[in-house]
Length: 300
Image (cartoon, rainbow, N blue to C red; front, side, top):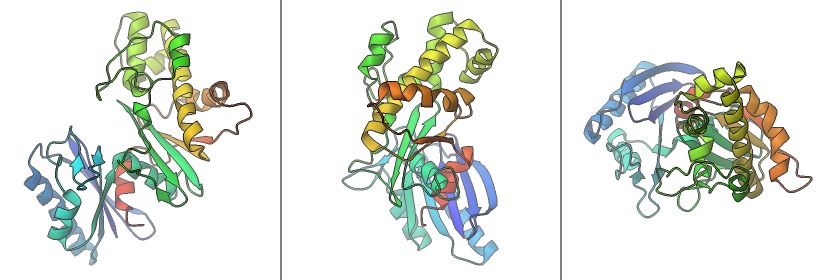
């Protein structure tokens, strides 16, 4: 049996999968703030209860929004004080007397899609999650690629291409959470779409509301989505020029927008070398469950 935990800022998702990767159990629990001992107890209790229920010693994987420190493998997750700076995998391995694997939540998302999902059978894949920010992950020849500093796939912090700033000189210049200006995610995320629409209309509404207005052909929404799609194509083209994957898997809150799958293949060639074969662009199969499912499957 495979046990997965996806630790977020407010919720911890827990799920159990059998050997056929069929979902057997899932639940959502509150993240215990900055109480590391409480988080360990939460995980320990669920694992031991599952072991007893299924009569096995399940394999445990954990996903989290952050990276691993290259020097000592501690977790770097500024928005999760309960695990920031901690050696969660090693500590839980000692408590549970078994190996506990940990990885970035975007990597878990892509690992899930590699196994029976949108990236199944591909030799190389790039995952892009479109939410409050932009997450990314890379898969090549049977394995996830984390990189020396665990930064592989962090396309949200690529600089916005200069061609976009030339085409749209009046774009706002928001400062990214990383401290820099003009990061790709400050424009291509759901938050970025909201910012573009606000600049045009003076009104701040959610990305889903903007999509609804776009579908109703509201002029400001049409203009904002057109600009957003061009930014998405330009930023994605930068990643494609480096990675050249067979498949791009889109996830996150805006991945269901049909215009992404209609427009990106039309717009990408304008940002790539002539004659480049485009990757297949697919919507994630497992959606919001991808993170916890991928964490559960980290032992595969």
